[in-house]
Picture (cartoon, rainbow, N blue to C red):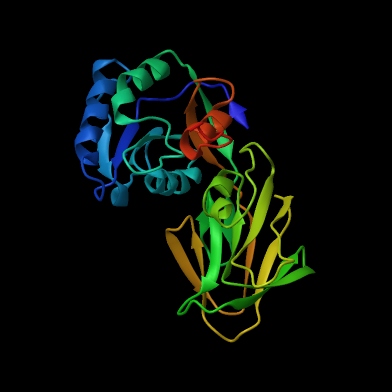
Length: 277
């Protein structure tokens, strides 16, 4: 869902990832730029990723995709939009590089942006995800037998290293590397992908986001479910995954009408023909 509305910038916070070199210094530059360009009456507050405040109107994440994911999860329950500067590696979700600060300021000043709501997942183990939930054994890399139920109806049993339940946003992350399809972010669906399945018949499944997914374990062992590669919870017998009641809200710049496909080409080199010798 896209929303062409104005941002409330009066209580903006700039959040940096201390594990990424230079992120704190750049956060200071972003705060100063906002103030000098009269986007806010006061310079935005600067906070570390592990100390995010709640009383804000807009959050700017400085780091990589992991930084943006953590900010988006945290602020989803507060309906606060998030924008990301990439100082990490791929930077698929982050909208801009540090050298594009002036460009970003100009876009925001001219209200040349949109707010996009992204579906999220929640689990009965009490975690939420913007990209994906990954289910694996806790202590070893042996294959597991995982029984998949949708709306309490048996679908299949996977013998695999694990299972990925992904949102459309996360379809270009772990799910893609595990053999899943690319899904445009606006789709109202979820993706289920087995990790290294030990059978030729196991294939990814795309389902409606209104479905209830239950994964039951066939062995008496410890399992874990990890949200966005960051928040891990533990369980034993089964875990239930559904659509989260809140969406993540991302601020996207209006570079062109096909941002998603442009990023596929630029970041993942999607559909690029081999160069001639």
